Length: 221
Figure 1 (cartoon, one colour):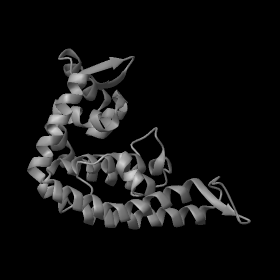
Figure 2: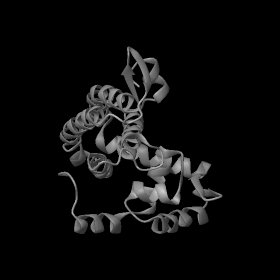
Figure 3: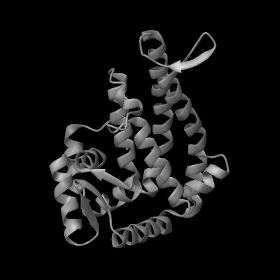
Protein backbone atom coordinates (compact mmCIF):
# COMPACT_ATOMS: atom_id res chain seq x y z
CA UNK A 1 0.00 0.00 0.00
CA UNK A 2 1.50 3.32 -1.07
CA UNK A 3 -1.24 5.92 -0.70
CA UNK A 4 -4.20 6.80 -2.92
CA UNK A 5 -4.88 4.15 -5.53
CA UNK A 6 -5.31 4.83 -9.23
CA UNK A 7 -8.67 4.07 -10.84
CA UNK A 8 -7.15 0.98 -12.47
CA UNK A 9 -5.88 -0.28 -9.11
CA UNK A 10 -9.30 0.43 -7.63
CA UNK A 11 -10.92 -1.72 -10.33
CA UNK A 12 -8.55 -4.56 -9.42
CA UNK A 13 -9.55 -4.17 -5.78
CA UNK A 14 -13.23 -4.36 -6.68
CA UNK A 15 -12.76 -7.61 -8.58
CA UNK A 16 -11.12 -9.11 -5.51
CA UNK A 17 -14.00 -8.34 -3.14
CA UNK A 18 -15.55 -11.57 -1.89
CA UNK A 19 -18.29 -12.71 0.43
CA UNK A 20 -15.56 -13.25 3.04
CA UNK A 21 -14.82 -9.52 2.86
CA UNK A 22 -18.50 -8.86 3.53
CA UNK A 23 -18.47 -11.17 6.56
CA UNK A 24 -15.41 -9.43 8.01
CA UNK A 25 -16.87 -5.99 7.40
CA UNK A 26 -20.22 -6.82 8.98
CA UNK A 27 -18.43 -8.42 11.93
CA UNK A 28 -16.68 -5.12 12.66
CA UNK A 29 -19.58 -2.79 11.79
CA UNK A 30 -22.27 -4.87 13.47
CA UNK A 31 -24.80 -3.83 10.86
CA UNK A 32 -24.84 -1.73 7.70
CA UNK A 33 -27.05 -0.69 4.82
CA UNK A 34 -25.99 -1.51 1.29
CA UNK A 35 -24.58 1.93 0.50
CA UNK A 36 -22.35 2.09 3.58
CA UNK A 37 -21.30 -1.52 3.08
CA UNK A 38 -20.38 -0.68 -0.49
CA UNK A 39 -18.27 2.28 0.60
CA UNK A 40 -16.38 0.09 3.06
CA UNK A 41 -15.79 -2.61 0.43
CA UNK A 42 -14.94 -0.21 -2.39
CA UNK A 43 -17.88 -1.28 -4.58
CA UNK A 44 -21.28 0.15 -5.45
CA UNK A 45 -24.27 -0.29 -3.17
CA UNK A 46 -25.77 -2.65 -5.75
CA UNK A 47 -22.65 -4.80 -5.87
CA UNK A 48 -22.47 -4.90 -2.09
CA UNK A 49 -26.14 -5.89 -1.88
CA UNK A 50 -25.58 -8.69 -4.39
CA UNK A 51 -22.67 -10.00 -2.34
CA UNK A 52 -24.53 -9.88 0.95
CA UNK A 53 -27.66 -11.44 -0.53
CA UNK A 54 -25.60 -14.56 -1.19
CA UNK A 55 -24.84 -14.65 2.52
CA UNK A 56 -28.50 -14.11 3.36
CA UNK A 57 -29.42 -17.09 1.16
CA UNK A 58 -26.84 -19.20 2.99
CA UNK A 59 -28.04 -18.13 6.43
CA UNK A 60 -24.81 -16.26 7.17
CA UNK A 61 -26.38 -12.78 7.12
CA UNK A 62 -29.86 -11.37 7.58
CA UNK A 63 -31.68 -8.47 6.00
CA UNK A 64 -33.82 -6.34 8.30
CA UNK A 65 -35.48 -3.81 6.04
CA UNK A 66 -32.30 -3.15 4.08
CA UNK A 67 -30.08 -3.24 7.16
CA UNK A 68 -27.68 -6.16 6.95
CA UNK A 69 -26.07 -7.98 9.87
CA UNK A 70 -24.60 -11.39 10.63
CA UNK A 71 -26.65 -14.27 11.95
CA UNK A 72 -25.31 -16.45 14.75
CA UNK A 73 -23.81 -18.73 12.09
CA UNK A 74 -22.28 -15.67 10.44
CA UNK A 75 -20.75 -14.52 13.71
CA UNK A 76 -19.29 -17.98 14.25
CA UNK A 77 -17.80 -17.88 10.75
CA UNK A 78 -16.36 -14.41 11.41
CA UNK A 79 -14.80 -15.71 14.63
CA UNK A 80 -13.14 -18.52 12.66
CA UNK A 81 -11.77 -16.02 10.14
CA UNK A 82 -10.44 -13.85 12.95
CA UNK A 83 -8.75 -16.87 14.54
CA UNK A 84 -7.12 -17.69 11.20
CA UNK A 85 -5.88 -14.11 10.84
CA UNK A 86 -4.54 -14.07 14.39
CA UNK A 87 -2.74 -17.36 13.84
CA UNK A 88 -1.13 -16.26 10.56
CA UNK A 89 -0.23 -12.71 11.60
CA UNK A 90 0.51 -13.50 15.25
CA UNK A 91 -1.08 -12.03 18.36
CA UNK A 92 2.25 -10.51 19.38
CA UNK A 93 2.53 -8.55 16.13
CA UNK A 94 -1.11 -7.52 16.37
CA UNK A 95 -0.57 -6.33 19.93
CA UNK A 96 2.51 -4.34 18.91
CA UNK A 97 0.49 -2.73 16.12
CA UNK A 98 -2.29 -1.90 18.56
CA UNK A 99 0.15 -0.39 21.05
CA UNK A 100 1.61 1.86 18.34
CA UNK A 101 -1.89 2.80 17.24
CA UNK A 102 -2.89 4.08 20.69
CA UNK A 103 -0.70 7.20 20.52
CA UNK A 104 -2.17 8.05 17.13
CA UNK A 105 -5.65 7.35 18.48
CA UNK A 106 -5.32 9.96 21.22
CA UNK A 107 -4.47 12.54 18.58
CA UNK A 108 -7.38 11.41 16.42
CA UNK A 109 -9.80 11.95 19.30
CA UNK A 110 -8.37 15.43 19.93
CA UNK A 111 -8.79 16.32 16.26
CA UNK A 112 -12.41 15.15 16.16
CA UNK A 113 -13.17 17.07 19.35
CA UNK A 114 -11.53 20.18 17.90
CA UNK A 115 -13.61 19.85 14.74
CA UNK A 116 -16.85 19.49 16.65
CA UNK A 117 -16.14 21.94 19.49
CA UNK A 118 -14.11 25.12 19.96
CA UNK A 119 -13.22 27.39 22.83
CA UNK A 120 -14.94 30.78 22.96
CA UNK A 121 -14.33 33.10 25.90
CA UNK A 122 -12.92 30.22 27.91
CA UNK A 123 -15.90 27.91 27.26
CA UNK A 124 -16.32 24.95 24.94
CA UNK A 125 -19.09 25.54 22.40
CA UNK A 126 -20.22 23.79 19.24
CA UNK A 127 -18.07 24.65 16.26
CA UNK A 128 -20.29 26.49 13.79
CA UNK A 129 -17.50 26.36 11.20
CA UNK A 130 -17.72 30.11 10.64
CA UNK A 131 -14.02 30.54 11.38
CA UNK A 132 -12.24 29.35 8.24
CA UNK A 133 -8.78 29.73 9.78
CA UNK A 134 -9.74 27.60 12.78
CA UNK A 135 -11.15 24.83 10.56
CA UNK A 136 -8.10 24.98 8.29
CA UNK A 137 -5.84 24.42 11.29
CA UNK A 138 -7.85 21.36 12.32
CA UNK A 139 -7.70 19.99 8.78
CA UNK A 140 -3.95 20.51 8.79
CA UNK A 141 -3.69 18.46 11.96
CA UNK A 142 -5.72 15.68 10.32
CA UNK A 143 -3.47 15.74 7.25
CA UNK A 144 -0.41 15.43 9.47
CA UNK A 145 -1.94 12.54 11.37
CA UNK A 146 -2.80 10.81 8.10
CA UNK A 147 0.82 10.97 6.94
CA UNK A 148 1.91 9.24 10.16
CA UNK A 149 -0.96 6.75 10.03
CA UNK A 150 0.00 5.78 6.47
CA UNK A 151 3.62 5.25 7.53
CA UNK A 152 2.38 3.14 10.47
CA UNK A 153 0.00 0.91 8.52
CA UNK A 154 2.10 0.37 5.38
CA UNK A 155 4.54 -2.20 6.86
CA UNK A 156 1.70 -4.03 8.58
CA UNK A 157 0.03 -4.87 5.28
CA UNK A 158 2.80 -7.30 4.35
CA UNK A 159 1.88 -9.40 7.37
CA UNK A 160 -1.89 -9.05 6.97
CA UNK A 161 -2.78 -7.86 3.44
CA UNK A 162 -6.45 -7.21 4.19
CA UNK A 163 -5.44 -4.20 6.29
CA UNK A 164 -4.85 -2.43 2.98
CA UNK A 165 -8.60 -1.82 2.75
CA UNK A 166 -8.38 0.46 5.80
CA UNK A 167 -5.54 2.36 4.16
CA UNK A 168 -7.63 2.81 1.03
CA UNK A 169 -10.60 4.10 2.99
CA UNK A 170 -8.53 6.44 5.14
CA UNK A 171 -6.91 7.81 1.99
CA UNK A 172 -10.31 8.52 0.49
CA UNK A 173 -11.67 10.21 3.60
CA UNK A 174 -8.52 12.31 4.08
CA UNK A 175 -8.61 13.47 0.46
CA UNK A 176 -12.27 14.47 0.66
CA UNK A 177 -11.76 16.30 3.95
CA UNK A 178 -8.75 18.15 2.52
CA UNK A 179 -10.88 19.11 -0.50
CA UNK A 180 -13.32 20.85 1.83
CA UNK A 181 -15.95 18.25 2.70
CA UNK A 182 -15.96 18.35 6.49
CA UNK A 183 -18.40 15.44 6.69
CA UNK A 184 -15.48 13.13 5.94
CA UNK A 185 -13.84 13.95 9.25
CA UNK A 186 -16.39 12.32 11.54
CA UNK A 187 -19.91 12.13 10.08
CA UNK A 188 -21.61 8.72 10.42
CA UNK A 189 -23.47 9.39 7.16
CA UNK A 190 -20.36 8.83 5.04
CA UNK A 191 -17.26 6.63 5.21
CA UNK A 192 -15.56 9.26 7.36
CA UNK A 193 -12.00 9.23 8.65
CA UNK A 194 -13.16 8.77 12.22
CA UNK A 195 -15.58 6.01 11.22
CA UNK A 196 -12.88 4.03 9.40
CA UNK A 197 -10.44 4.74 12.23
CA UNK A 198 -12.87 3.33 14.80
CA UNK A 199 -13.34 0.14 12.76
CA UNK A 200 -9.59 -0.28 12.33
CA UNK A 201 -9.17 0.14 16.08
CA UNK A 202 -11.84 -2.48 16.75
CA UNK A 203 -10.20 -4.89 14.31
CA UNK A 204 -6.79 -4.48 15.96
CA UNK A 205 -8.31 -5.03 19.40
CA UNK A 206 -9.86 -8.30 18.27
CA UNK A 207 -6.72 -9.43 16.47
CA UNK A 208 -4.84 -8.83 19.73
CA UNK A 209 -7.29 -11.14 21.52
CA UNK A 210 -8.61 -8.29 23.62
CA UNK A 211 -11.99 -6.60 24.00
CA UNK A 212 -12.89 -2.95 23.75
CA UNK A 213 -14.22 -3.13 27.30
CA UNK A 214 -10.80 -4.25 28.52
CA UNK A 215 -9.12 -1.48 26.55
CA UNK A 216 -11.51 1.13 27.97
CA UNK A 217 -10.87 -0.11 31.50
CA UNK A 218 -7.15 0.21 30.85
CA UNK A 219 -7.60 3.78 29.60
CA UNK A 220 -6.56 2.81 26.07
CA UNK A 221 -9.85 3.30 24.23
